[in-house]
Each structure stands twice: as structure tokens, then as C-alpha cells.
Image (cartoon, helix red, strand yellow):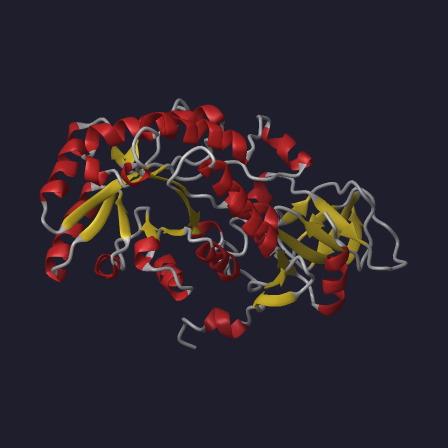
Length: 407
């Protein structure tokens, strides 16, 4: 990774900050799409807003004619705000209860999670006098022995009855099926979900209802070799995922004319955005306590997200030109008062006060999951391949934190 542009940003902006590379993000989305479309069409990505609803990234997805995949009224509002047409918004998850009336009125695609959502959708569609566009999220085993808490049990009589009720209702229009199971990234797991979803689409849906077969997310993306090694399993490429998954669809539906084939959808989040952001923080103090070297930074592990807490993210040291004594094997501690606010344990290289640390793979579940705890969220800078820099998000202030409170 070329860190020279980051050095220029350090001279112009206070730390901490994220750096988003929009051209890399767009390239990942295109690479994934082209890999699948080479084997099966129609195909679309539905970008996972919960992973990172950075508007600069969302606009890239919209420009590529992708779907928005949202799981709340909050995310639904963001999708509309950045210009997604409602019919290009897929609403998943158990949290669509709020805002459901607006979603139905707009014509968004609701992937129903349970029988209560089905009942409420029917009532609201009757009230609005408008057809609701729906699908069903299914729950089944893909060989991982993980029991998800989401969706309708695929092989139960109750699910078949629920689909039949929706089909019989004059204000509901069934358009497909959805599945997702987090953490199941192997080719074997993806082949199983593709095979089972095409089978269930044949069993549960009529021809005109098989418009969308949505397989959810959970593919590996582009990983730094040191980071990839921590997963202790093969890291498939986009092409290998496409050969495995789209190959199943091509075999099942390839003989049909394109207009009669279901649209294969996947919902990448971390897959396409994780490695398109850096998190940059600066060492503001250094000490040795009871034999333990500690570098104190102006950032926090809470800004590195879930992966930053579970894995050791690749980190680069950008020297600040200080003649301060160097610390060797330092633990990197954040700005909070929590003992476990450690961005890294045992840095492999010496570090000094004034140096900056740039952490890779900071794009997934980071800025969107940072709580307003002790210090508000930091800025996000967009760095284009031509060197142009823009502010994608400003630093949050105390007024932002207090805006919903009565003061």
C-alpha cells in the first residue's frame, strides 16, 4: 500500500481520521459483479448498509445500479436520501417494524422475517390500498450446524402455509426468497446455500414469483496476507465464489430465456468495503509501566470496529520526525478509560511520540458502530486515485452528541 498520500493528509488534518478510497471500493463492486455475470445473468449486488452507510460509498453503489440492502427505518431513510429508488431497496432483518407503512407505500421490497411481519404487512397494505412487494427470508442448515435466529424455517408446514396466505392476499405480491448466515464464508457453505435456495424457490414459489433469489452476504474480500492468515481457512477469490454460486444458478436456470430467470442477488458489505478504508491515529504519549511499554494514541479500538477487537489488523508506522526515545514492543492504548482499549498488542516495530499509525481493513463495522463514548466520532476523508481529497464526514462535536437530549 502506498502511504505517501496519507503522509500529506497528516500534515493537513488533525488525527484521528479515516481515509476512504472510493475508486478501490468501486473496483471491488465491479470485480464481484463481472465475476458473477460472466457465468449467470441477471445478477446484482445489494450493498449492506449496516456494514458502513458512508454516503460516499452508497453513491458508488447507486451509480453501478446496485440495490440498497437495509435493516431498519433509519437505514431506509438514508437510502432514499442518497437517491436509491424504493424499488431498488431491499428491507431485511427483524427491525423493519418501524417505518413499514412508508416502505409499503413506496414500493420497497420487504423480505419478511416472521409470521407477525406477514400479518402486519397484510393489514398495512389493506389500509393503504396498495400492493406490498414481499419475499420470505428462509432459515435452514448449510452444513455449518449454526442455528440462525432469523427467518422462516424453510421445510416447515407453517412456512408453506405463510407463503400460500401471502399468495392468496390481493394486496401482496411475492417476488422471491432471501437467506443469510453470518460467518459462513467457505465455498462449501456457499454452494449449499445456492443449491438449497434454488430448490426451495422451486418448491415454495410459482414461476412468476421467482424474480429474486437473494443469498445474503458473507464472502471474503481482498485481505492483506498477514490478516488472511488469521482466519485459518482458504480465502476464495471473487471468481471462485462466482464459479461456485453462479454455476449452480446457470445449471438450474441457464436454459431459460434471460427474462424468465430469477435475479441472483448477493449482499456484500465487508466483502467490498473493509479494505477500502484506513484508520489513522497519532502517538501522543509513551511510557513504560512495570516493564510494559505503552504507546498512548488519540484514537480508540472502538473506532476500529468488531474486526479490530477480534483480529490483529495490519498496521503501518508513519514516522513523525521526533527525536523522542523509541518504544519497542509497545501496546497501543486508546483515549478511553477502559483497560481493554488496546488497538494493538506488542508492536513489531519501534514507535515514538509524534508517529502516526495507519490501520488497514478499517471499513467494516467501524465508524457506524463507534458509540458516543467519551469522545465523538472522527472525520472521514475521501482520497481518489488522482490524489483529490474531499471531506466525506466532519468530526462530530459535543453539540452533535447532545442534539437529541434536553439540555
